[in-house]
Length: 108
Length: 121
Image 1 (tube, rainbow over the protein chains, first blue to last red):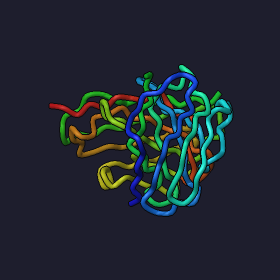
Image 2 (cartoon, one colour; image 1 turned 60 degrees about the vertical axis):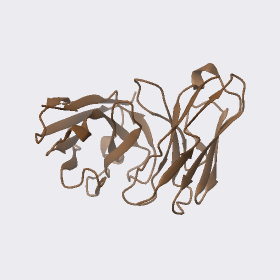
Image 3 (cartoon, rainbow over the protein chains, first blue to last red; image 1 turned 135 degrees about the vertical axis):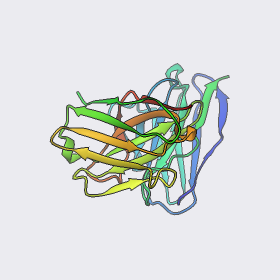
């Protein structure tokens, strides 16, 4: 099974900061990767799929990049609504759908 | 609008069984793969199961293989998760999700509100 490593597990940031989150996979998954945002008590929200494609309706301050085993999610200017936990998910190999452990972004 | 509504959660004793349902509306159900994802209290997301649009391909996480079965009734636009031999480790909120395409090789763009399963004596 593919292992997913997200870093950091949590960190504090301020509104307006540029934020970069990292996801690393144990095997080459091409661009079969999605990023989700989740707030407490809510379902996850798809931000990015195919590693870099912005989901419809998601603000353009979110962007994704990477392929193979190393991926990043960047928030160009952190807004108050962005404080949440972010998960990456691979859907390349069976079983499809493995999530990383998440990165929690909170207010500095 | 796309809507997913889970039901069937509740309190069950260890070793018991439960069937979750997810009623879908607002999109051609048989054209999209579906999945179940769970989240234990205070923990991260854990992918559980997925099924292709036709229902011909199913996938389960190792942690539930042999105990959980995902299925769908395209005539009723409903997804199911049959859970048996439940243990306290299965306690979680269970979300159903809609994939972006007919196969499970894609992200999930819509989720239900979740249904809580509590396994306890």
